[in-house]
Length: 313
Image 1: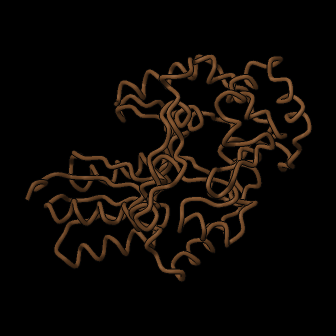
Image 2: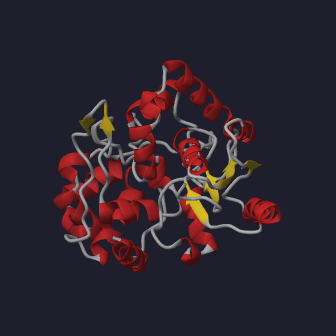
């Protein structure tokens, strides 16, 4: 067995890809610490592997909280006196860098995707049907999957039955509002942005948007959901931390593949086309446009993420 004697820690281990990783590590001889916010779910995964003779420790942990991570590490070291493998399956994508080089702030931005019912950056404006559609197809009227969520859709949730999808949606909708930016509830207002796009030469970001984005995403910011995600009111656009937006603009998206058919309009990568200032300008325009009201993006932040993502490729 290839992992005999090793100790692995797997986050996001209660279901789907995470549960499969736990099973694979255990099958190859590893002792496994399985972490998840769903304590009952991760215990069920661990118990199933113990029934096959594996040594698996279930740990209820919120990986966005340093205290929970520290407690989990203490439990692993106390039990096995070592840790050889870390598989971070939880959360979304914001920073590509060796784990030991990621700062606390960047770790939060990677993991803390808001899945609560918060109205702006969470799922508060999504109906049960919106959630089920997203889990089944990777897109709905509000957003399109990207980053690590693409793999979740491609390899896990699209294959779930309607009952399981409804149960997941009901659970997510039950989470009380948390996080957010303390901004007023989003209300669509295109007037100022539409006027600006009629004379884009007056705004650096509007010029880039008109040249590279408007033909797909439109003047009204509503794009053509679910084929193309809207920008107006999109939770990822409204987030305080723009890392995910910068990354997807620089590096594009991997293909969503639903029932064997790739998505028709994946996001292209603009790293070879636009410089740091141009990307900062267009994202600042998008985050302010259509009454989004999100903070501006600095060219230095784009440069930093360009360097780290290119180094990992």
